[in-house]
Image 1 (cartoon, rainbow, N blue to C red):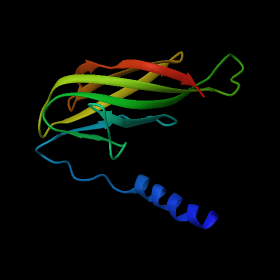
Image 2 (image 1 turned 45 degrees about the horizontal axis):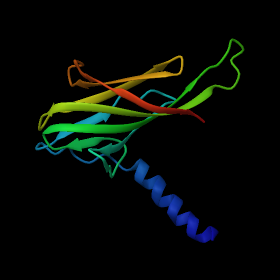
Image 3 (image 1 turned 30 degrees about the vertical axis):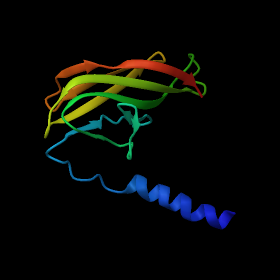
Image 4 (image 1 turned 90 degrees about the horizontal axis):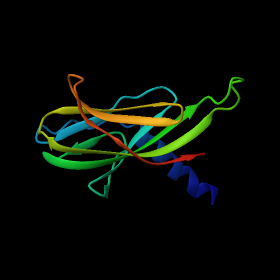
Length: 136
């Protein structure tokens, strides 16, 4: 059994380390602001699972994006073990344009996540909605 797990783990790790593909100029590209100690990943587009959690590549038009967001929040004045949170986020945007790069930003404060979509110039285009959050 252990022999079978080694190739599986190696293939999963290599997928995470592979370079991002070239952006298709006929599609919109959405990536994420990454913060140390946090994980923000693409999950679904219009209800369909994404092939790669590191970005979205979308046809022009309206889309509903689902993401997963994992973060840690220090609890209490003694800085004990931080609380690890896992949240589902959603962003709806009606006007993705071909050849345009977008970015999703997520942050948290006091265990409450906030997210939004911005264009390449940092202009905020749409606010995200927070679905279920769970302590881990």
